[in-house]
Length: 396
Image (cartoon, helix red, strand yellow):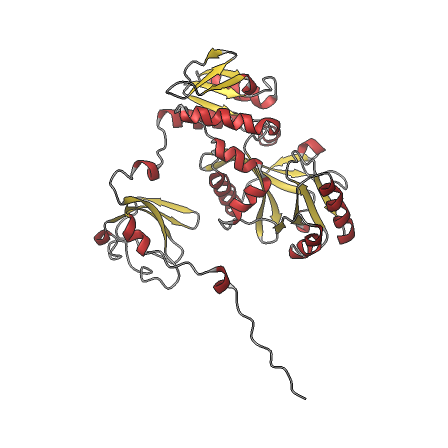
C-alpha cells in the first residue's frame, strides 16, 4: 500500500508513530505537508499538485488536519476523495466534527447522550438559555477552542452572564452547557478505529482544575470501557463520518455524555497509558480498506429505477412485531432485509426465521415506493407538544 500522511508536524509523536507503524508493515509511506498541495481543477479529471509538481498515485491518505487549516485541509481531502483515494476520515466528517455546534446538532438527532446545550446570540436570550440547561454552574465553550482552551466554568448566573457578554462583544460564538458535576475533573477518551474501540483512557485533572486535557496537566490511566460507553463512542464516530476518531465522554449519572468527537486524535497520551499499538491498528484498518473497500450500498444499489436502500423502523404497536421476516410480507412487497440493528447488535443478512421486535432497525433494499408507504406519517412539532389541561377560573 502507498500511503500519504497529511501533516504539518512530521516530527510530532503521532505522525512519527503512524509513519513507523506503516513502515514496519512493509508499506510505502510519505508525510506530506498539507499546505504544499494545490488543487488542479483545469483538466477533465480531478488532480492535485504537490510542491508545484503533479502528485504521484497513492492508495490511501491519513489526514492529520490542524484546526487552523480546516478549510484548506478539507478541500485537499475532498480532492483526494474525488480521485478515488481512500481516506478513513472524509472531508465532511472532519468539517462536521470541527464545528462544535454542528457536531452537537448532528449527534442530538441520533439520541446520543450529551450534556444539555444551548446556543444564543442576543443578550436578552442568555438568561433563559442558562435556565434551559439547568441553571448555574454552567460550562461556557468557544466554538473555535481546542485542547481545553476557551472552556470556562461559571459558578453562578451573574458570572456566566458577564463572561458571555464579554466574549460576544469580541465577536466570539459560545455554547452554554450543563455542568456534569459527577464527572468534574475527569473524562474518558475512547480511540475508535473502524467499528471498534481499540484503546481507552481516563483523563483526570490535577488540583482545582476542572478540565482534564493532557495539555492542561491532566494525568491519564488505562480504562476498560463498559459496553454502553463503547457503543456510544463507535456510534458517535460513525454518525460524524469518521473511521478514526477520539471520542471524549463525561461519566454522567445517566451514562456516557459525549463532549467532542476529534478527527485528528493525538496518540501519545493513549499509547502511553494503555501500552497498546494504536498507530498499528489505524494503519491495519486503512490497509484492509484499500485491499477490500467498503461500498456505499445507497450509491451502488440504485441501478434500477424506483429501487434503492432505506432504513425501516419497527415502531411500538407495529404489525411486524412478533412476526418473522418471512411472515412480515416484506418479500411479497419486493423488499429485502440486508441488515438488522437491534440495540448495539448488528445482524447482517438475518435469517428469514428471525422474529422482529419493537425498536429494530431494518436496512432494506427494494422498491422505494413500497418502503415509503411503510413509514408512519411524521407528526408536526406542534402536535408533539403535549397540550396543558385548561385550568378552570373560579367565579366570585
